[in-house]
Every structure is written in structure tokens, then in C-alpha cells.
Image (cartoon, rainbow, N blue to C red; front, side):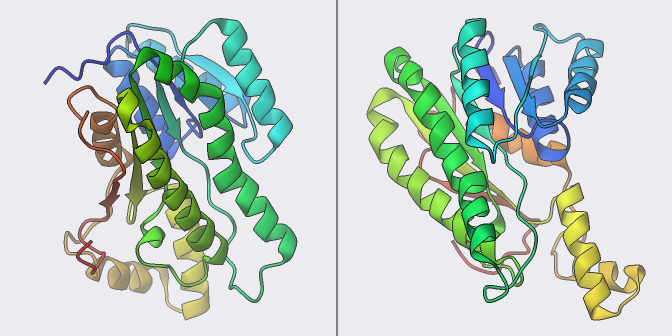
Length: 264
């Protein structure tokens, strides 16, 4: 299938590893000019080198940014504008806050989570969506979590603020649909990433189980009996960023091997 995105420019945040890295590399494989953003220059250099070694059509460009910090985001926006790039595919991928219960979460942590997961998305949208509106074409994707459909115990900040972000993006999808811009969320549930591994380690310690015992019990709850890969996640995300996906908007697509028990 021709995805009809060759030559377009994408910004992928949190692109140094896991899901973000997989999306960046797959977009580059489709002939997209990819701008990658992460907090570490060394990590960015590794992704760019991997893309170059794969012989992708365009050289990736890297930008160091801490998405939880407004001034850092403003620097990112300025650097991209000064480079002359016009972003038409915007992929929001931000790491999750530390696990806490509602009552144990301090007000500062709520505020930080809001800036990290919500404000960063709004800020980058306001910077790059006007160009999409002018071009009458654009794709906005946000990597969220299955917790927006089924809250996960111990993830108070992520459950709450990612759900708010999802609602905001659903509202935005209505506003941008007349411009040929789609807005969708892609929600990982059981994808093998550092984030999932860290959460599993924390829960394993609380349960008192060995790692083998905990993993066996965890995988038993997944109908496919295994974790998904970042590449499997990326395949869905890249399709949603494509031309043929032009009638998919305002949706949350989950990737969890069937673990989620709800019908929506």
C-alpha cells in the first residue's frame, strides 16, 4: 500500500527509545523527513545513526527537549521554525509519571504531570497546527495508555491527565476535521517497553512474587499470551499518519493483545 506520505515532515517526541523510536524509524522508512526529539543528545545521535545505516531517504534531524519544561518546548519550536521545516505529521509521545495513589500524590506532582502530559501536547499543537490548516492536510497522533479506558491501579496522575488529554484531542479532532487534519490517540496496554518493565518490577516487589511467577500470571491475562513489540505498535501509528487513513479521526486505538475487557 502506498501510504502517500513520502516527502512530508514529521516531528516525533520521545523518540530515543521504545515506541517513539520505532515510530520515527518506520516513518523514515516510508520516505518521511523525521525530526526526532528527546532529552539526551547521545540517545538522539544513536537513533539518527541507525536511520542513516538503514539507508533511509532523508537524514533525521535531532532536537534536545524536556517536554515537561515550557522554556525547553519554546526552544524546540523556535529551532524547528528556524530550520525551515514545516511539520505535517505530529507524534506526541511523552513518558509517564511515577506510580502513586491518589491520596499519596502531592500537589506538585499533579502540576508536573499536567505540564508533562497535557500542556506539552497543547503547546506543540498550537505551534504546528496552523501550518497544517493552511496546507489542508495534517496528522496528529498522541501515544496515551490503555488507562484512559480502564484506569490502572497506582497510576493516579497518568490515569487522570492522560484521560483529560484524550478528551481535549477528541474536541480538537472536531475542530480540525474540516481542514483535512486527523487527530487520533494510540493507547499501548502491554507493549514491551522500559516503562512497562519498570511498572512490572514495582508491582512484583509489592506482591512478593518471583519475577517468573509474576510474569506468568501477567501473561495469563493477555489472550495472545505475550507482550507486544514497539514495532507492532508503530505499524498502527504509521498507518494512522498516512493518506489512506484520512477518514479515521477522534479515535483511540488500543494495542494490548486483547487484555482490555471492555467492548469500547
